[in-house]
Image (tube, rainbow, N blue to C red; front, side, top):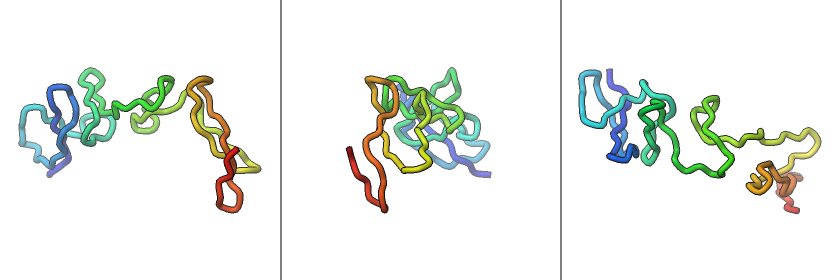
Amino acid sequence: MPHRAFLFDSNNIVENIIMVDSSDSLPNLIREYSVRGIAAIGKVWDAEQNLVYDPNKPYQAWYLDSNIGWEWAAPIEYPTDSDVQYEYTWDSDTTNWKKIGFWDSGELTLY
């Protein structure tokens, strides 16, 4: 039965996604079902961790989170507010979420 696999270059960057059969064998071919994460062109394959991840870490304090499919996550959860829907952005200086505005009748009002 065909399944997805990825080919990577000498720097372990995924350069192609292909469909293969179980008998196919190519150099630098990894079957996607055998790794953690979802392969996409430009992602990195970490052979030691058997993991595919996006190399573009958005902020220094963020980490790869196994609970959300090996995507980058903030060390502090995104705030949830009950009364007003506020909008936040990540503040690298304080390593915390910073309130930048609020939603009112479908429109964002910035501070």
